[in-house]
Image (cartoon, one colour):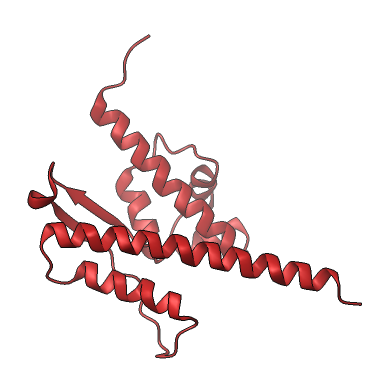
Length: 157
């Protein structure tokens, strides 16, 4: 069996990861693939491939462009050691309202802003780690709240 070169395998993993995030985003949108594809600037058959994980023939650039259109945060780190690392973060969509939904959401946004500011590469990586941890906490809090709403709805007459 032929071995896949490391660079090709890395690109395949990146494609799969971006596709997974796009599929999750599409599911959360709660619309048809046709509507979601239009919002993401993609043909519906291409979105279907992404949702079903058939991305080997799609370019990483196409997937990244769709993720940016979706407002998904993307961070790319380059370099072997943190002191030499460069990092790029796509900007999250700005909110038109100054009011926040929660302190946790505020902390996530603040963490993202800090990771994009003029920090050293090591500080950027630390901020990104904190940002990722806060996003996980936000997701867990949302899941717990949704489960609580579902339980409450079951017991209403």
